[in-house]
Length: 193
Image (cartoon, rainbow, N blue to C red):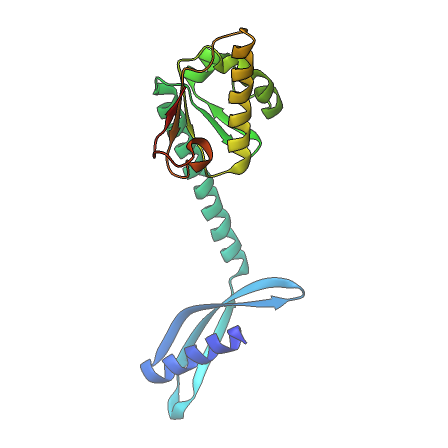
């Protein structure tokens, strides 16, 4: 149906304009997608000549090249973000779901933890690592699992403080929107002690 529509459009354009080139269509042949490029020319007495070329290989090569370029762009973007992150003076940890994607230089130096750490190990070690820090800057409200994880770390730090094992986090600064979970909706960037 879609391919037939494309052929009919090519024929109509050739009848109107004299020729139509470069339209592509996809057909499934032997259970696999194949691509064709149409060239249609008006002949005498309202007739047209339509040729189709199989461009499946060319199309696959173009898509492979595009994917390769996209990967290069992502690698370069990640390299630049890593350099920018490592230049930041504050410790930063980037998680994607349950995977530690990166830890900047300040985080690695301060906490002795890098990307090789598992999320389970991080959950175990984070309360100890946070206990003697002057502040924790955190974005809450976008991911319930992340919010629960951070609040769990802070609860463990407070429990340690009650047992005089270490001093608690002095400040928790909630960044960004969706802060109701952390501060009861009091302020857009709440501080609590």
